[in-house]
Length: 447
Image 1 (cartoon, rainbow, N blue to C red):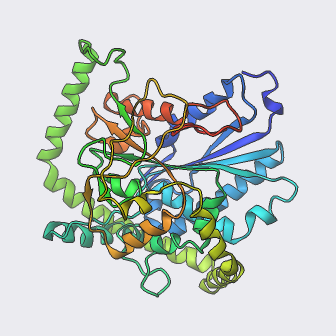
Image 2 (image 1 turned 30 degrees about the vertical axis):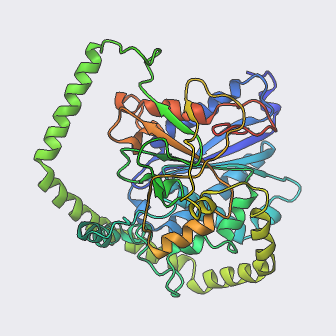
Image 3 (image 1 turned 180 degrees about the horizontal axis):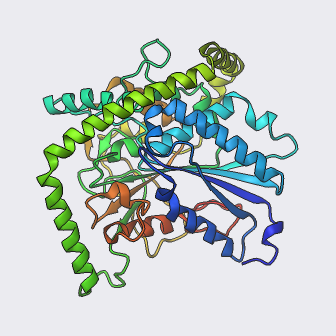
């Protein structure tokens, strides 16, 4: 650890959990980020903050309400840290729904001209914006089947306002557009603020993520048929205890005991599935009721008229710069997934397959996506097109052991053997750190 660590300017990193989440879900990311302070060539001191304003059932209250809570939490933390240290850089990491909440919160700060007004003389550079398994296109199933239609209809009603927004069933402005579509508008604050970040990176599970499928986490309209079809690097990970991928270690007694425990719990789950479903529905209705009360209290605390005035003022300020901003992003930023989708019928070589144990620190180049092209909802197609006006680094994650890759991708529950592949994903993400001012590769998180 550098001897003068306390004298270094701060790189403040905010971590935001997902639906029904709590701060413990982000604890492994938090610990690995703080461990970067041991890097000999460090030019900034890493300081983290796990946002706690939306823990538990408060995530029912809507992306906008949760986002405003996080925006206020960010303001308070920045203000407190600035009293004792100089904040030079800021990064934001969102997991699952937390990625959407992060985008809304940053848009709120942008609409208030926070970067210009609050930080005069204390310039803060936005550096990394990263999401893990975040449903940027919502979770609405694109399949036209009756079962999918039932799922989309029921799902939009079960988790209060957050459910409606995730399933694109809300009408945010009364003009027929849902919140996620409004948030993707290139002329609005939510996209403007993303342009400020030097790096925008998304991680998406290729298989076994039944919560957030690959296409919505990777902002594409293609669902890979195999782990290989992808526009960027693919991380193949296996058991973290395997040192030789060609051999299989004899499982320990603890491993056998954990496997037996998991299978017993799975059997119990399926046996009690009808009871569990009834309990879940009852809990959702009950929590949705309390959520609606919290939302009403929130609206009373911040009058709707003031919300509209804020947004109209922002639109008037930014209208003249929209065309130039879009043209700038469409310049030398490289081929994005949105652009590639329009020519996906062209032959495509497979992308590079990257072993998480040995990641070369050189440039990787995207390839055209192949796989199953999805018939997305019109709002999803609009979001897809709009968000891909920005250059994104997209990483496909192929977790092989866990049947619940959504939890594994960030090692959400430490100590669970089946989720430990996520440790490699996080380590890959943080590779290349310590070369301040240099662009990393795929997982080269910049400090």
